[in-house]
Image (cartoon, rainbow, N blue to C red; front, side, top):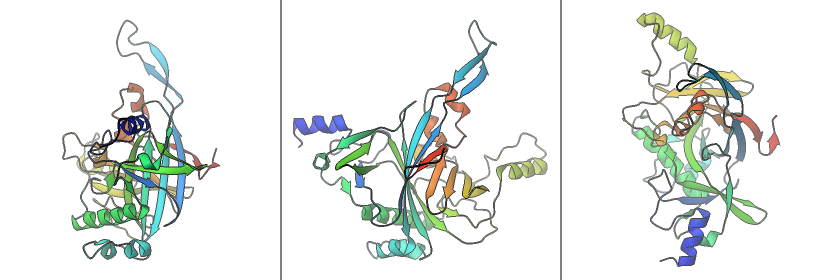
Length: 323
C-alpha cells in the first residue's frame, strides 16, 4: 500500500495509484521510456485553429446578425517509432505469438502516439520520478513492440474488422528524458499500430485499417461520391455507408493523405473505435498529421465543429521548424 506522501505525489504528477485507470481508458496506465534503440524515433508538432470564422448568430435578440469568432488554437504532438519487420519477427515473444506469421522482412511496424491536449490548450509536460511509478507499470519498448505485433496479428486473424479497437490503446504514457529529468505528457495519449507495406495494388481496401500502402491505387473521396450519386440517382448520397480501410486520397509534396470509413454498428463508439481519423503519412517518418475528429468532437466548444475535418498543420519534425 503506497504511503500517503507517495499517493499525494502520484496524484500531483498524474500518476495513478495501482488499480486505477487513466481518464477515458478502461486499462491501467503503462509507462514507457521512448528511445531509438529499436528503430527510428520521430517527434512531430502540429497545430490547428487560431483563425477567425465568420458566422451568423443563431438565437437570442441578435439572431441573424453577423458575428466573427476566433477558432481556438490547438496543438498536438506525435511520436512515431518505426520497427522493421525483421525485428518484429525476432521479438516475437512465444510460439503463441503470431506476429512473425503476418510480418514480412520488408514490412514495418509503425507505432504512433498522439498526445491530445485538453480543450483549447497545448500539450504540457510534467516531471516524473521513475521510483514513483507503481510496480509493474513501467513497460519496455520491447513490450510495446510485441504488443503491436500481436495486435496486428489478432486483427488479421479476426478478418480485418471495420474498426480500430484491436489496433488502438489509450493507456500508454510515453516518457521523454530531457536534461537528466523524465517527463510525461499531461494529456490523452492515443497509441495506434500500423503495418506499413509497399505492394502495388489496384484493389479497394474495404476494411483494412491496419495497412499503410503507398503503392496502392488512390481512391479520392470526391470521385467515389460523384460515382455513387450518379449510380443511385440521389444527389444527396453520402459515403458514410461505404466501409473503407486506409485509402489514399492524394499524394502531396512527399506525403500521402489517407481517409477511411470505420463501421458504426455501435451506438456510442469510443475514440478507440475510430482511431485518429483521416491522416497524412510521410515515408520514413510516419504519421505527421491527422484530424483526431472523434476526440475533439467531445469538446463543448461549438466552433470546433468548423475545423473537425481539417488536418493539423505540421509545425516541426524532430525540432526542425517547417514554417
